[in-house]
Image 1: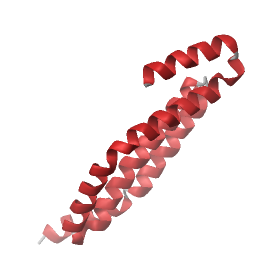
Image 2: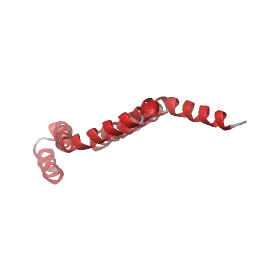
Image 3: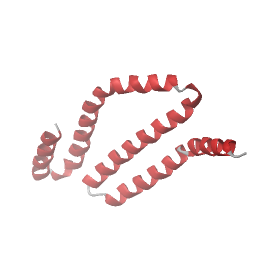
Length: 120
């Protein structure tokens, strides 16, 4: 599917360059939706793990959010790079790093609590 979309984008760029970016975004979304249909089993597995880690559910969800944000940031930055907006892509990456730092605060706090609990 990716190769087919790449060929379509090349053809669109040569015929109508003004809609090449829209074609790239649409193709990326189509590929993403196609890939997401295979993740129902993974989501069920993650729900099972979350239910087994009841005391640490918040931490586990934080980790999942961080991973999700990482994928979304990479996806958005790659679309910007493909459309020739590398400066916007860099800002997306910077914002994503800051968001990941914000999302990691509960994990860092729990880690510090554990370390303080180990000190006699």
